[in-house]
Image (cartoon, rainbow, N blue to C red; front, side):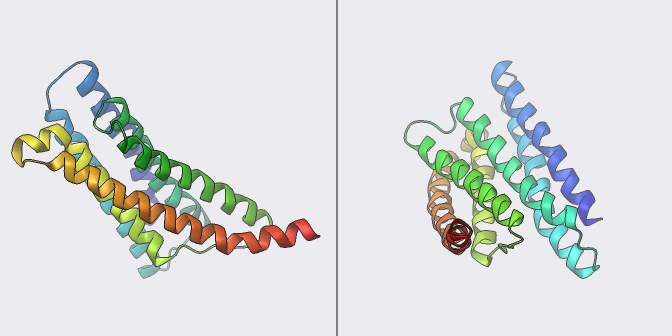
Length: 190
């Protein structure tokens, strides 16, 4: 069951992207933003429940530990790209998205290298909060112009949260790098 939730999150990625793409390309109205947001929220909620159920049911697996962070990065990364493409994220705010995407790639590379050395870099509680904040920020931005029609400043709140998430992303990225750099130096000295 936990892995099925993670697989569902991976499947949600192209669905959310397609909704945002069709909404912009075919100018089909803002209702597709709500569809994208609904799919995204369901996917984001599974991020909590897949881990919780895996621990509660003693169903932790290697594939689940590998796929869970990948699913998170795909969900956030692809949606950030789509939001940049449709102009929801633009100007200086693109740098917040660049920071988030860059950190995720760098940490993934570091983890991959350390895995070759059989060194595990566990996910910190702060990194979990970082992911949660990224998901909330992206949710606001998916609602974007559709949300602004219901409650003013939804997009601006999303941009503000994106910057906070970017700062937290930088901090946790540095934290992971600092934890892994000792192993990198040890490997060079061998």
